[in-house]
Length: 231
Image (cartoon, rainbow, N blue to C red):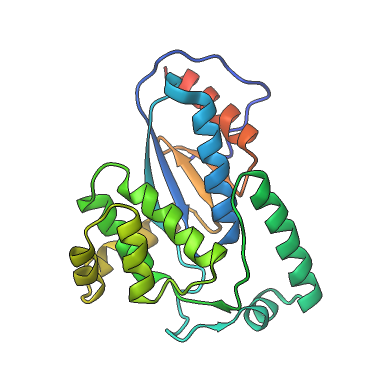
């Protein structure tokens, strides 16, 4: 897998073959919300010049966290060794970056496990209509980072699924079982084996890697150059 594909200048493209984008991320990652919105802006700018298909891949930042979650400040302070004041400054920076790409961060007091959210996203990808997984990802990020809701709560997840146009009964059925647990665990392991250690990680055509919550301009330039080289 190649490193970050960031060209020095935009490359003009014509209609090309479809580009595959794997967006490896976690609902609990604020930079994933920033990065996804920035990527969406880049894709809007590129338009039909570069047709794409996006797949959302699982990555868990809090894989060992219990269903009750933890206090956000205490958890982040212990995990990263930073003070409450530093956390507040980081959050202010993230809110500013989010606003620049149209994502509104709200207040969130706790951190939760996101495994069930990833199971639901996997289900949306294999059984849902076109675009449903993408819509669900956005809905889950808004619920967690915008509204401070618990992505480990079945009611929150079903509401997000319904807002994405997915079947409520089937969503409830999936969450009440262990469906897609093995598939999510396998996907997580595969991406870790591929070298993914932080998110968001955007993998293009299985070989180009763009990491972090980049601005739209970085995504746009990188995707145009990758498309031109592939064409």
